[in-house]
Length: 532
Image (tube, helix red, strand yellow):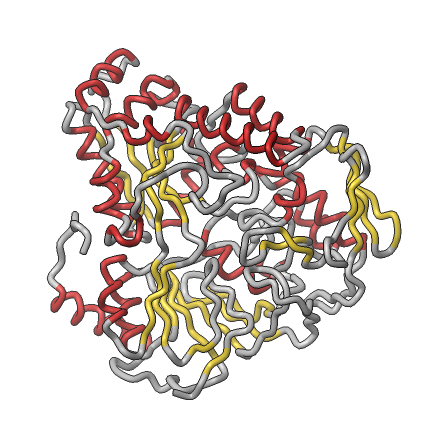
């Protein structure tokens, strides 16, 4: 079990959880819906606010949006980009000078509003993507044009090679989802409204009652690819007719409702629930195969951490092992401890550069570095956090304690998750530190969100920009790997954010759900329900 920062009395919590479940569902015990093969209910920790997968980076949006939308390319089970709405086995051809992509479009796809998909829809969606995606903006300066060269063919031209283009189209975060052209053009840089949530995926939006639930229903006009690529690519079928994502903000209530049959799936459970689930014969604990890396988010654009010496001192004062024990669950979920930009099994993107900096922990030296950067404790460090994800709050408490141990006061500002996310971008002067998690299974270094120009925190680095450009121009895998090593080393030299360790997202699922693919979030295509 993890070392708990906020110990709780389980009997009292279980009783309280049962009471809340009773209020939510009208039962405490076996739900009347258990055994139904028509609707699957998943308990989620908060309101996704927006289902715009192409714009919103929130995990809740990704979890639900992947059932509704599809991109031109999607990651397979091995994190390789595969054509999804692009046609053919590869989905594109590349000119000899590696600057022009010709993408054939599938001819058998319709949107949820009945519109037939053509190149015009793809062109409009690509233009919106280049305007809203942080990783797309890293290559947008080299963009020369996007044109429909036929009813089912699109050409994208750059003035220099852009190695990131296809992987970025298939990114887990802010992929290029394809929308009807009128919707893409009307939305522009704004988030899609609920009425504009129109995709091509196996499920369509039926109802969204904000703060309560999101209902999806099978799209009967869906046409699937046939390949068994797994991940987010290939063959998909909506075998469960209806999906309900119910907002249940308390993790103990989510766990209790899973145990009593109120819902068949529960997301973002406390990692110390792992053994409780494993010991229940009706449930399976799901440690997501594609996990995240927990990060301390630093405001480099305003406040005390504009000075790189302060960011380096912050890295020194944090005991990563203690932080991992407090926030990431049992050590078997996150050891060996590492917080590089990619996981070790991701060989093209993993680098050991700067690992010694990550492991360094020296509070006395940190105090001197803080003083040299002008941080002496006269003003508290403002830490923006949330109870929506308990591990984020626990990390905030750890960081507060570490700072106070060397005489630097720290203040916690606690909000619900949507408000926290909003303040990160809309009120950058109100916070110094926060927390988040990034995917460790990346296909390209531009998918490291804190290196993109739109990510909160205002980090800028000419050296990292140059290293990314070196990657873009790489004509071989060997040359690309040298650029990745350079980028990773600079991350620990300039400290845009601080990685803590592997954050396994723990979920629980009832055995009534069959053929569920435990990949990223809640892609429920191909799964089905049994009566018991």
